[in-house]
Image (cartoon, rainbow, N blue to C red):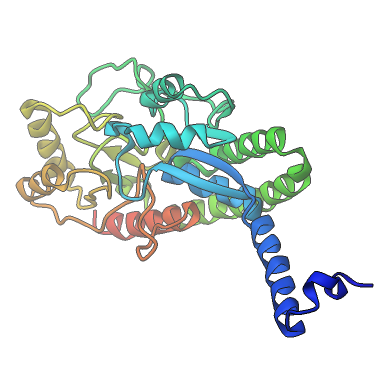
Length: 313
């Protein structure tokens, strides 16, 4: 006797019983399909890397979204709830998001954390002087601007995911290995693109000092009115000095960043007699319908715009 032949079900139409059984099977399959590992990433670039490494095994929530500035982010009570629902929290480190540690502590989150930049050789502002000539003790947190550093990021993320989901370790490692090859291709392509610009023309103006790792890797000189943190406003003297340098060195490659206030760089560009170029994506990805929606797209967009701008120097 089958379950459908039991006495108390015989009075129901067989078609109804079969449909109900099918619905239960589908419901169970859907529940299984949506049972993904909840991971929280501090900002959009990390969120993309976690999605790449995690694949279809993870559900990623990003605290600081596309086109938003993580430097000035203020956590909300809902963000604490997001952390508590997570199995893994991924931050950049290098003092990029000091609010993240406070949020983890205040929320009571006790799960695993990954500092993506752990193991990266950090760039310190006391080793390299800013355009104003002042020494800084700050650590430059924008390590992702060098694809070789992102190799470290994805390895750390894969290790963190494997720790909380051992069953998916092989998948995470395979995804990371595949992505590392894409990062290596990106690095080679970027070198080839920059090589088309004479060394004397490789100067760029951006909103804040977010491209130090890119500069060190590819030999492009970046000048900015703001330092590594967008919370710091430049003085009138610093802006005036930068305008004089732009005019003296005839720099025409001037860009605003997607997450920065465009007013300062627009005024600076106008005062210096330079033309403002397209937006660069520095600390955040773009929206899905814009050209920097993933890390790889962001980097290729930036390089393309930088090369086009430097040709006019």
